[in-house]
Image: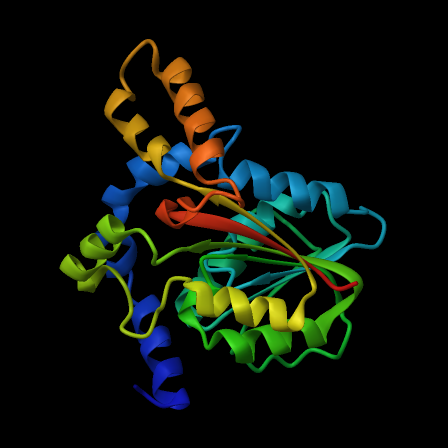
Length: 254
């Protein structure tokens, strides 16, 4: 187990090197399934869209990477801030923002577990595959501190409960940082310790198989069927929800 400072340095070094993105490029054909109208990103976007007020919403992209998602949202929000541990990723975000003449966004290199923001600053906090890179309890305490009363958080996180996916992770250690820990029951218990209002939706069991049919003229019909199966197998009441690849977590500060 590495100490806190070493963990920060490991994450920073990993994400300052573009090799991680190149090495993981082949996973795009699987992740692209979840950009479907019924997938994780669509579900995440729906939650955020329902809580945006263009007149006053201040949104934090927690672990923003190259800023693409926050830039996409910039036209719908009053203001946005993106933070990331990687100087390289923040540089890419700032460059993209400048090239598109976007004025209502700011980006900072910052430790997500110890931010520089005042209490109750943000209306919405979003993160895509970030919490499992951090000390979850330390992060959640910080998130709760900087989230406004009645604010909402939305996180997309991978799970470590599917044995096949876990085996793949063990066989491909160079695709991820040493310290990251996809969510287990322990992490969900920590979320519930600090947020009483929490919803979780699970994705990615049968739908992963849709990648085999990507070039089929029946792809959309097949995917719809696989989503129906996932809705049953991965429901919150199902004992098989542990077979999911990822989940969307919605936290409300009320």
